[in-house]
Image (cartoon, rainbow, N blue to C red; front, top):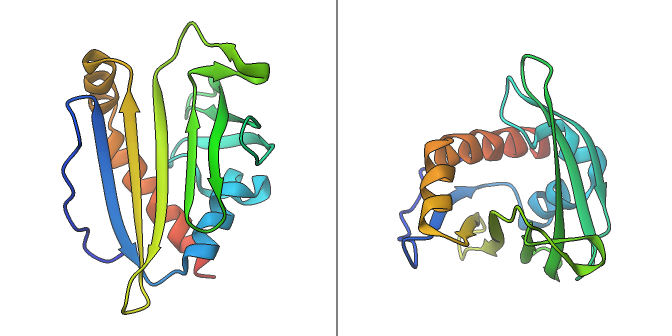
Length: 161
């Protein structure tokens, strides 16, 4: 079960930040983000689902997911990994498509970190940095905090088994 979240301020008006602490080790949380067979089990907050996931886990590699709404509408997403530090950090963006093709519909860059605390717990920080203030406001209005928070809870539940 996730522990109460510490507060961390965004670095700018174009950033959203979610911080959680959990008993689940960083390596397990990282695995949940990087193994397609795990991603499809937790990634989208219920009642939505993730129907497909492909991962090429390396800088320049792609991550493709397809989310399905409760009404059955599918939303494919493609991103590129910019930085991969096993069990510590993932950075990915929709600013590029495969083969470094610029994305005309860019939205944000995600910076995920896992830190093992002195008490053995893991601090997970998700930063969503947007290209514009308007995109950040849109992401907040879409329910970033609630949605990413619920998804994190689902990840913790899955990786606690």
